[in-house]
Image (cartoon, rainbow over all chains, first blue to last red; front, side, top):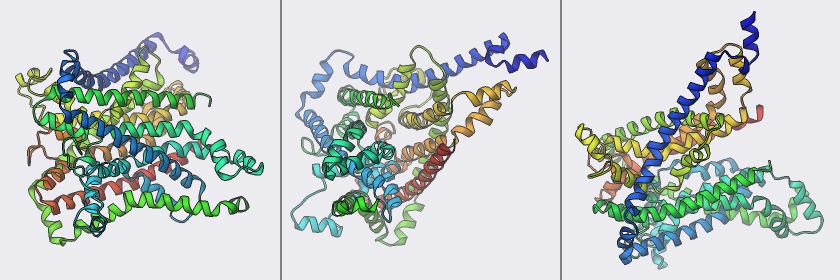
Length: 287
Length: 276
């Protein structure tokens, strides 16, 4: 009887030995989590940063001394910016169409948008090769028009846009879904055109989701290699991106220089991820 | 509804067309393109490629790495998610941020990190070398980098679900005399199963497709440390283009199948979500 009452008393009623066991278990689980993340995630990051900047800025200066290095970082920055910009617009549009429109094939479109989550990035690269290569009808057609896609920055932007396609859509879609259409109807009734309604009513509501998705896209683009390495041609100072440059440095046994460039890229995208998580936290805070 | 929509119909058509064009050009047309290009040389190229020892070995290696990565990230992912949601401790915010680190890192950087740690003259190299354990340019480092890259997927799927279900059911189960393990397997696990399955599906896709990090840590040893993606890479560089296309098509087919599973899991999750 007594023990039953004790058990029914819940947590506070646990015997002290049970409580010790519980707190030990908590500590053990927390320890496992710390060791897992510490050894597996934190240690490698520390290793790269130390390798790149362990002896001050010397290695970094050496690594960036070649014109090819700066050109690679610049190329990665601008192609990522263009891809993030394009997907910010098209991703928002796609989310809007998927949430608000009803048309045959909507479910299919929604699934296709998620494809880049599943398709290996290298396969995306091979798909671009197959489509724009000299052996395809489409590639020849563009060639006749004098447009070269493969082994130019255009191919890099196409690859980046493809692999990051779902990011903005999947950030914006849930926010749009929860948005009450009453406000938009009120705006329309009060005489606002569809554009004004979108700018003044809809966009403010989805802004932080769009920004978060775009930053995530940009950060992802900065590090992308699989889809780019085959289609870019990797010509130094022209189509050699920073991740491919890092790969080449490691295969030339220059890990310190590679680590410098990698740390630079990491600094860019880590700041962005931090900003993104802040934005998401702020977005969720009032709910 | 239709009365409101009528004035916007023209604008709607254009928006929809723009979206279809964008998705079509980026994904659908290239997907059709690869099917045609891969199958164009004839079915014998497909069978020859898929029965060559290099390809078989590469596919097996990818399968091994994927299975191990999925098991490790699922097990530890649930532990980390549980600790993050159920415990309050100093450094919790740091732990939370560490989980997202792999999202901010280029796969190339991850491979480089393994090289710095285990490569010639690396921090931990002598420790393993003296014990005769080969880490870099071998399977262990390839698994390590893949696990690293896949760490966030399960955790980020399971955490929100754990937060949502709260403590009530677990407490009830414990008070009614169930052991910790019984509570976990009978109460917690059934609640998070769809989120976990979704995380596992995402991890599988990512592990199969991983290239940037294994490109660096594998040492590119043909027939030894060559995964399916690395085979495609080498085949293309060595101008064995038809073989590259065939294996790429196979991976694309696997990932499309996975995506169908992912979509199914998402819908299950949503349905369970609305029910509770």
